Structures are given as structure tokens and as C-alpha cells.
Length: 248
Ligand code: SF4
Ligand code: F3S
Ligand code: FES
Image (cartoon, rainbow, N blue to C red):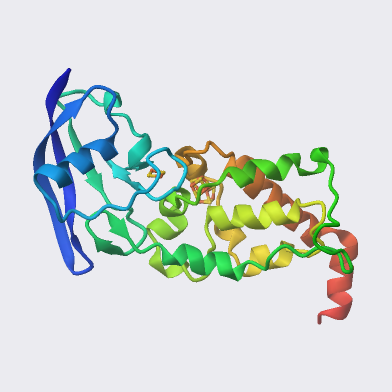
């Protein structure tokens, strides 16, 4: 069973662009990425789109469908009605390279700013021993496919370009939380999370969690516990006294 679907796709580059209308065949069982591929094959051979696995695992095909950040390869056509016009636009938070492809290097910059795993001194690779129970909390965060949909969605940077420098975004604040919860990581990341990675800018709106294709509880399981750890440190009476005495 097939029908002619109505699509509106953003075309352009860093200098500007706009929405173009297309009518494309839709077949049963297809996802939006199938339609984009058919569009390339039949009407717009130079349409730029980034994709790789078509299985929701590489995190490449992130875009916005009817304004909602989603993976193109995991959005079934069956969630839309046949008469609906489906609008596909690039992620809004990152600069456009061309058509549906954005420059996501902001995320790589933020990833590099987080100090890596720091094992106890003297412990060599191969000597790490952990109990499953100790890694259970942070294991969820390892499901991340780095699609950057959460980074694209968070209003702290989505509507405020000026915050990009001081805010690592939910994906990388979650990375800080993952390391902070790691049983063998000895670095104390709490001050840095607040002062350098912008944890305080997150006001727990949970939009990041809403769009995560891996259904990671970013806000509840990473960001809020991280905020609690920062608050514990800040309001710990001994730390407070130490700061008063030695950091004047
Ligand atoms: Fe994508 Fe979820 Fe990872 Fe964010 S946390 S980059 S939304 S998989
Ligand atoms: Fe942004 Fe998620 Fe916090 S959307 S404000 S990082 S809860
Ligand atoms: Fe890999 Fe969509 S193509 S997640």
C-alpha cells in the first residue's frame, strides 16, 4: 500500500535558505529517512543529509520533524496521517552546513573540555576491578549514541547563542555525572561542573530527556543528582568553614 505524501524540506546553507515542497511516494513500513532517500533518488539528487546506520544507533541522522527533534531513521511514517504535510528541517541549535546537515563541532569542543577518567594513582589498566552494583547507576548513561538531540533541544543554548561558551549541555553534564558516579574515578568534578560546565544554567525543564531516543533519564538520573552533589559540597558546614578561612 502506498500513497503520495506531502513533504516540506529545508534547503540552503549558512547564507540562508528556505522550505521547499515535494510530493514523494510513501510505502508501508517506511521511516522518514526512506522518504529523504527517495527524494534524493528521484527529485533532489544534491539534497544533503547525514546518516549511517539506519538503525537508531549511530546518532547521525538527527533533524527536526514538524519542529520536534528526532532521528530520521527512527521516525515511522505511520505516526503521521496520509494527508499531513511533514516538515523536515535541520537541527536549529547548530550552524547549517547544507540542507539537513549541521555543524555539530560545538559538541566535540564540549567533550574535550571534560577531564577524562582519572583512576587512583598506581592502578594500571587491567587492574581495574568494580562490582556491577557500583556501576549500575552510571551504566544507563553509556547508552548515549551522541545524536546531540538533547543538546539541540535544551533552551539554554537553543535560544541563547551567548550561552554556548559557558554551558556544556545535557549530554556532557551527564558525562560529568557518569564520571562522578564512577567507583574508580578519583577526581572531584563538582566545582568544575558548576563553574566551568554551566550546571547552574540547567533549570531542569527536562526537554532533553523528552527527546532522547535512548530514553536515558538525563535530568532525573544525571543532572539532578549532580546538582545535589554540588549543593552538598557548597552547603557542607566543614567545606563552608574551610572556604571562609582559606579562600578569603
Ligand atoms: Fe542523544 Fe540521548 Fe545521548 Fe543526548 S543523551 S546525545 S539525546 S542519546
Ligand atoms: Fe536543559 Fe535538560 Fe536542563 S533541557 S535546562 S539540560 S533539564
Ligand atoms: Fe544512524 Fe539514524 S542513521 S541513528
